[in-house]
Structures are given as C-alpha cells and as structure tokens.
Amino acid sequence: MKALFVYSDPGGARMLLSKLWLQKELFEEYCIISDRVYQFTDEYGFEIQKYNTGDEIIKLNDFNPEVIYTATSYTSEIELKFIESGQNKNIKTISLIDHWTNFRNRFFMKSKGIEIFPYFIEVIDNKSYDFAINEGIDQDKLKVTCHYYHEFLKKWLPNISKDEFSLENNLLSSKKWIVYAPDPLTNVGGVEEWGVDEVIGLDFVLNSIKKSFNAEIQLYIKPHPNQNLEIFDKLHHNIVILGKDVPTNLLIKHSNLVISFFSNILFEAQLLGTKVVSLQLGKILCKLPTSVSLLSVTKEEELTKLLNEL
Image 1 (tube, rainbow, N blue to C red):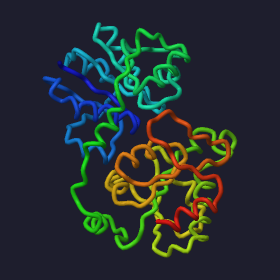
Image 2 (image 1 turned 90 degrees about the horizontal axis):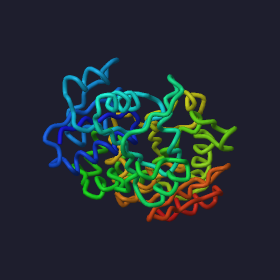
Image 3 (image 1 turned 90 degrees about the vertical axis):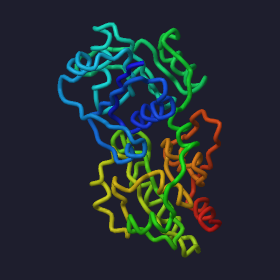
Image 4 (image 1 turned 120 degrees about the vertical axis):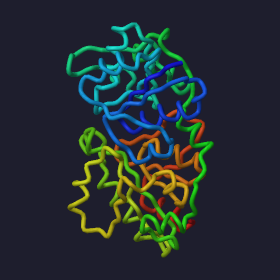
C-alpha cells in the first residue's frame, strides 16, 4: 500500500506515527507531512516533510497515494484540506481519533463553514464508537481499531538510565521527580469554562508539596505543546519549566508521579509504569472510558498524603 500520513496536533502525530511504526510492513511506500515540528517524533525514526501551502494538491499529484491517513486537529485545517483533495481524486481517506470526545467538531472546516468527512474514521474502542454515533457520525464510516500510541508505549523501552538522562537535561537525579503536565485550559475557556486553569492547578500542587514532609521531591513542569507559557511568567514560585527538547517518555519513565487534569499523558504514564494522579478541581471530572483506573484528588491534603508515601 502506498500511503500518505498528515497531522498537525501532537496527539494526532503520536497516533499516526505509532500506527505506521506498528504496521510498517503494510506500506510499500509512505510519505509523512506536518505543519508543525515536535521533538518526540525522533523516537520513530521517520522522515517528516514540512507542509507548504498547496501541498494538499501538489503532493497528491507527485506522490499519488492509494490512501491518505490523517489525524484530527483543532489548531490546523491541513488534515481537512487533504481529505477534501483526496476525495476529489477518488483517493481513500481515513482519519484516526485518539480520544473519546468532540467527534463531529473535528471535521468542521471553519474557513469554509462546512463539514468534511473522510471515507472511514478509526476510533479507539467500543465506547468511542458509541459516543461518535451519538454525535451523529454515520456508523458505516466508523471502524473500531485501537489506540495505536498506547500500543506503541507498551513496546517502548528507554535507551538511557535516569542518571544519564539527568545529566543530558540538567535535572536532579537524586530527587524524586514530580511532573506537572497540565492541560492548556486557558486555551479553551479557562476558569470561566472549567472553574480552574493551569495556574490554579499549579498553586494546588505547590501548596501540597509545602505541606509534605518528603524533602526529596523535585517538581518539574512539562507544558503541553499548545501551552501559552506567558501565563506562568507572573508567578514568583521557584518552578522549573522544562523545554520542548526534553523527551517526554524518558521524563515520565524516570519520574515518581505525574499530575494533570484529564490529559492523555495520565494514561500514557500508567502504560509506562509511572504513578499518576488527576486533579479533580473546579468543574473537572475525569471519567474517560478506559481499562485503566485513575487516582484522583480534590483536596491539597489528599495530594500531600500521596507525596509523603513516595
């Protein structure tokens, strides 16, 4: 099979690249295109081409794929552009959704004010299949496959020790690492929508650490790729914000606890064998369908207790 892979958002990138990594023998030839660059894509060893305006037409003519696989991004329309162009050339288009929410919105092209659906939509489990149907997605378009990135993580192994990783990234290997990896809630309504945001969550974590008697704790913030870092500038806390060049999987693997709201990083950390906790603050209710149960806290004292037990 000759396939073209297109993504923009990080979650979609991991989903598509993991599918190709796991099923590479199915593809005689492939091409990967994205309008964004992420450090974690180096883990896969694939060449990724930069998207340029008009590539949804140029690449289809030059590469002539039999199938187009896309992710589903909120911050870019390149996937929808490739789906539209692919359909115009009678090329099969398949989109992968890596979550359990907002199925229909993913296929709305704001620039044209229309919905553009692929030939097939791959969803990660039966629950997501049911949710997609409830949102009005045609069941004939839906296929239940798996969460390819989770399958990739199950097979992934770190290639360096914690000491080596610490030395390369100027981290304190002697400490117990707590990673705060919040969802960028300020991008999607913030306090007004959720009753909480990244800064409030950070204050919650810092206050819990202050109450802890575990002196070995070192807090690191791993921002979401879409995070507006300026919201942390006003803080006077002694916090360490890790850059995009710090490999997330290695960081998680060598950490003692990962804290977020409802980000996929919680599920991914558990697959890597790291303890996680969900902050159930404000209007947050992390009840995403998964075979992995999540530990959650609503009070600082609850998190402090967990920190003392590390």
